[in-house]
Length: 187
Image (cartoon, rainbow, N blue to C red; front, side, top):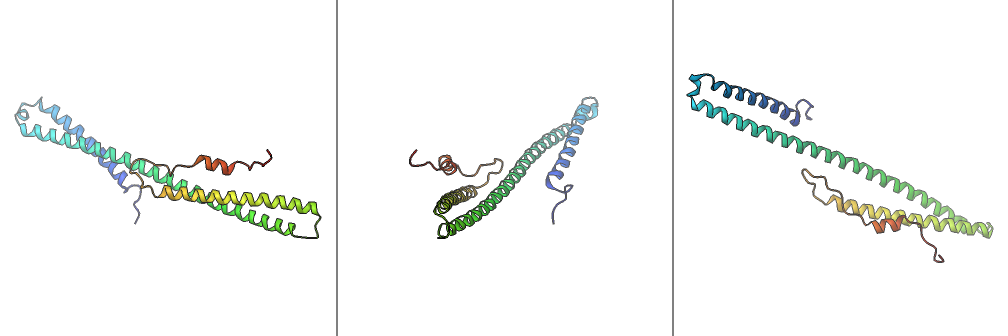
């Protein structure tokens, strides 16, 4: 059974915090009133009780405030992690789709290259297209391997309670080499 917004822990704690603030104000008013009434001034136990209530109430208010801040930070971190996981899944699906398209391109170009009925110049162009599609497919495969490694490295990190940690460090040189177009041997 899921808690409604009114019965969730943070909501209940906020209500408790408000009640404790009212108790603090009442204690301060009673302490101020003790000085004006001589019959209560002699009751040291009353003063001590009010001071204890003040200190306890203040401690609870501080602890509830800290808990609420931690809870908000944790929820924000979980939300960000869910958003990043969605982006990762989308990127993975896109990589698969692109890889499928590249496989079709390579297959069709290979079919054209081996077709003896086509003129030589068309087969050379088909060979260039096939080589380019293979290179792109290899880069896509490498990108998928790197992102999978980075995700697995990041998922092995234990989540912090109040600090959002980024997944594993990226090898920017390797990623840049994968993204950059291949250079010709001539120049």
